[in-house]
Length: 291
Image 1 (cartoon, helix red, strand yellow):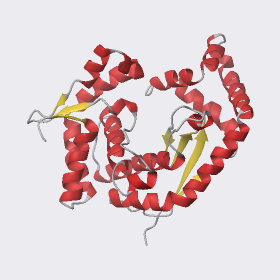
Image 2 (image 1 turned 90 degrees about the vertical axis):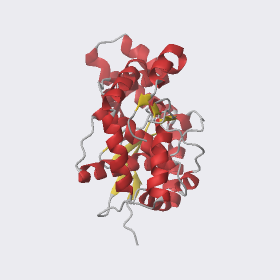
Image 3 (image 1 turned 120 degrees about the horizontal axis):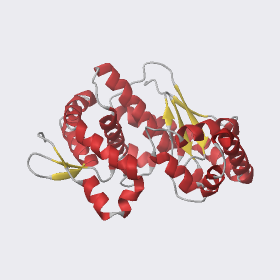
Image 4 (image 1 turned 135 degrees about the vertical axis):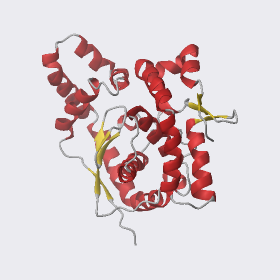
């Protein structure tokens, strides 16, 4: 029997913990577009911060979060309870499917801490991650905790495999690859069915990255990685690590191109999809020598 980890939802002291998380992503140079996402989700918070100095920033954020939680307490409690029920019902079978798809076994008992957040995205740290409940508070059909958990845990597995293989990859290339790889994995059966996903596209920044193969065929990055996964892991029946080494060699060879794409994303974010010239520049295919 496989040694599967647990997913534990942490619901204590959320109001105390949230301000630090907000502050981090309002002033994070690595992910500058997250500041825009927060202000788009909370224009009232933006107006409050625009009219004060930095010394009062934390206090204003704390008060804003406290007020938001009080106003939406009933919904938040319900969403957290539903999330606990879902992880108990499907967590084990989803983790087992992920283990099979990535040929990964956890070396010891692990607990992944899942922390609810009202951020409009779901950041992660080592062995823990936040899962956004903002969409569900507003009644939108957003990703549930299990989908977010498996998405983030696939990143944890990838980082662990990368460390063991001692492969060095530039940060921007690693970011794009891990997000595209996760989209590939979550669209594979039986995980796709367990999570009730339909053509999971992954994070917005990877959806219009395109690859031009040496035969001239142009594929989206996710489809390019999927093609390799299907051939090496599924059809040839080889270990996930073999697929990973081969595809990473290709990704590493175009690290510079991916860094240029990341600069565009960091500067413009979702504005890219509203500007024809920006989208053309962002989706201009990256040429590779293999595949």
